[in-house]
Image 1: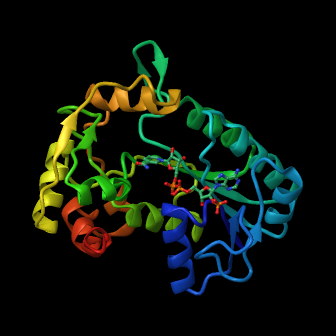
Image 2 (image 1 turned 120 degrees about the horizontal axis):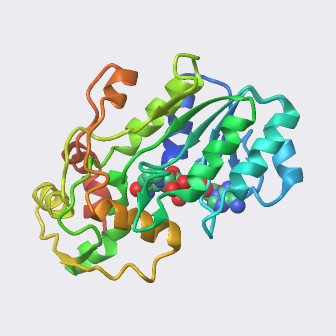
Amino acid sequence: MILVTGATGTIGGHVVRLLTERGMPFRAMSRRERAGGVRAGGVRADFDDPASLARAVAGVDTVFLVTVPPVPTADHDIALVAAARAAGVRKIVKLSAIGSGERFDGETVGAWHLAAEEAIEDSGLAWTMLRPPGFASNFLWHRPLIQAGEPLPNLTGDSRQAIVDPRDVAAVAVAAMTGDAHDGQRYDLTGPELLTFADQAAILEGVLERPVKIADTDALDHLPDGMRIGIGWARSGGAAYVTHHVPQVLGRPAGTFEQWARDHREAFTALP
Ligand SMILES: NC(=O)c1ccc[n+]([C@@H]2O[C@H](COP(=O)([O-])OP(=O)(O)OC[C@H]3O[C@@H](n4cnc5c(N)ncnc54)[C@H](OP(=O)(O)O)[C@@H]3O)[C@@H](O)[C@H]2O)c1
């Protein structure tokens, strides 16, 4: 039995779809009773409610762990690790982030992801850490701006990163959860090509056949610490590398940003 946390979110949603396609037994976790995409057999639980976590992990072999704390802290991961150990869970596959633990401007990038990874490593459970850069799907956040013809804020300047298709992240997660070949591995799950934000906007513009404008901004101070440090690090070029982890695990090339954009064209054009 696999517990999928973050099951109503971007990566967890794709994991749910893949496990369903493969007929694998899983339990989808959400804080909401009837969350969209979570089928009957899901479990209602909250990282802030230990009793609900104990119910969620009962009888579970492997956990896909996605946390999005409102403030940067490993508390949600640590709560899940405690519940998992008590319930005899065997393995945790954690969605982390590229660069976690790097130093930038006197601060630690992804400090809370790093602390969570360390808690998992110290737990004695088997683990795989997935560390993607920015998801292609982040552009869906900008649909209202694109529709209004307004510029998208470019927080990363001219720096490049290998933006990844979230479907690839989910596929690697499923591979890691359904075999032991990836136990003890820490994968930087990049896409196949380095792109600036302007490159990404230009690709999207070509696919949508409508203008996708951008406006540079270096106003990062309003962002929560975890994002501010991570974006600053990416902006300085820290995330400008491509790895072979996605093709290695999946046995095929990583998806391009252009393919992701083509596959999601309707999500942009179906705007009111
Ligand atoms: N976006 C990027 O470019 C990027 C890049 C690298 C790494 N990451 C990492 O990826 C993770 C986010 O993944 P995602 O984008 O797939 O997530 P997401 O779409 O933001 O979804 C978050 C999920 O967390 C659940 N959730 C939130 N608070 C919860 C709580 N207190 N208890 C239980 N569940 C809770 C929500 O479920 P309900 O609302 O249904 O309860 C939802 O399914 C973060 O750790 C981030 O650092 C993101």
